[in-house]
Length: 262
Image (cartoon, rainbow, N blue to C red):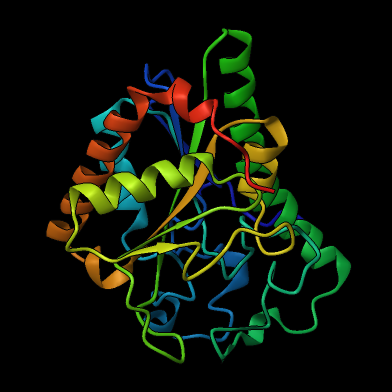
């Protein structure tokens, strides 16, 4: 079954594909949009536009950051409620029946065919676009440093005090550089070191596959959503991240040569 009608938006958007910088930006949860064939999944529009449906503010920050540092940007076209493009297919959180304590009726009891339709229409095109972009850059002899732009809800059963989280799995090299730079330049902000999340093979996809799997420097950046919910906050954080990246990019060989945490 084809999931998307011909007149619906594409499942992936690629901006500034030939950007001259070393950074490659990903936004895995860029949109709250659902394919029309899925209806509303049993959720109100207001609920779908909460943090369970997308990473509030992340796409706006990523777009501004892409322009500021001349980096290509790959964004998902549809909601994580349809399928989460930062989860391995087949795990319970890939097409969640419950997320953030909220039941998603339209995701309950799906058969293999329904799951495959979502994977083929939404998940695989997004990741194939990333693979193709990174392959072209590698063939051209270009360095690629993967930065995934996310946001997190300020409260998930308990307050989350961090203004930004810099998260990673087995390789802390780039994350360490971001943490040190953020804390030094803006001592007033609270930076989470692998908080509120850590990158794992079962709970993430983009960083293990496109970063670590390729041997590329990579980091997942999580901004607290109350800091990027409006245009002023989005511009502020895009500017901060651009400043951080420019400083790190100037010493990227040193970061690459650093020890890999295992």
